Length: 116
Image 1 (cartoon, rainbow, N blue to C red):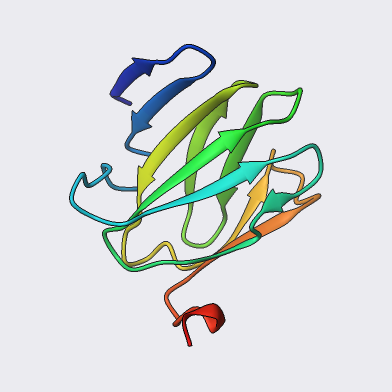
Image 2 (tube, rainbow, N blue to C red):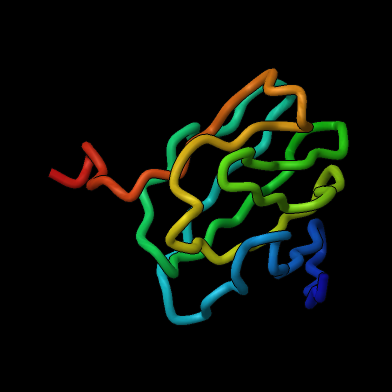
């Protein structure tokens, strides 16, 4: 996995190609998901193919975001860091935290209910 590390004063950002995913696209919309101790905020991301998704780990523990079918993963996201991934056409659906499915998020290609 290749990574470009961009250091900031309080947080490090890493742009990665997730296992099975696609590289971030600098010309597309970016969505942010905050990783908390026991949930994602927001838990549903309304995105388009080619958009970027930034996972920001605000919890005290390292975290791995992954999906089962089709399979993709961010790899380890250390506390206080973030990872940006590109959204591929097959990534729509549920993703989970740390492999135990204790909490869940979702990527949806539907129109956001707040867009109306």
